[in-house]
Length: 96
Image (cartoon, rainbow, N blue to C red):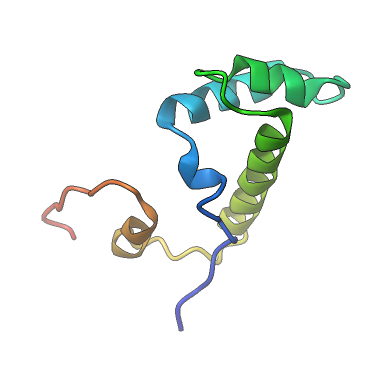
């Protein structure tokens, strides 16, 4: 039976570029989680300036769900299964 992961909708996770994700991660690491305007500060730091405070907070919740799923041990560590979730092709190696 195939294991299910978190509900990663295309409306949030998939519409973030690599650069947006990296600046999001850096902002999360530097902005105090108790800051009352945390999400506004994180949103303002995202490359391109196209993300709202609501967007970054939703993205954070999805990230936490994804991390919980990975840490739960329910993730099959098979590259072939993971490539179906990627938006770019993965090069084939001798191992896969």
